[in-house]
Image 1: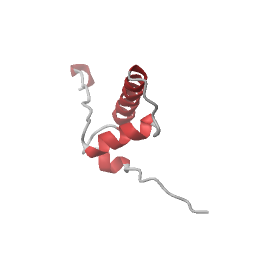
Image 2: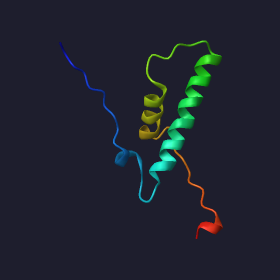
Image 3: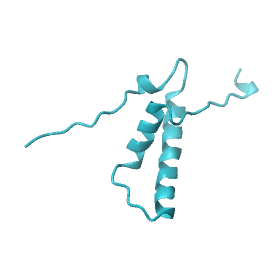
Image 4: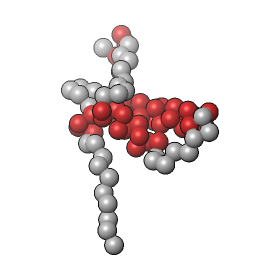
Length: 74
């Protein structure tokens, strides 16, 4: 029996200096929901997991997130 491991990008490969892990998680979750919604609208079946697709898109630079910092946080 062969075991295949998926390549998962490391969080450190996706996050730049001082970027929030929390912001990445929220961004990936929102993108995964968009992927599911688009597939449903187009009556497509997604073979891969939407979260994995979203992570790969962030890792490849296709999508990125911007963190919001209010003046009150300073």
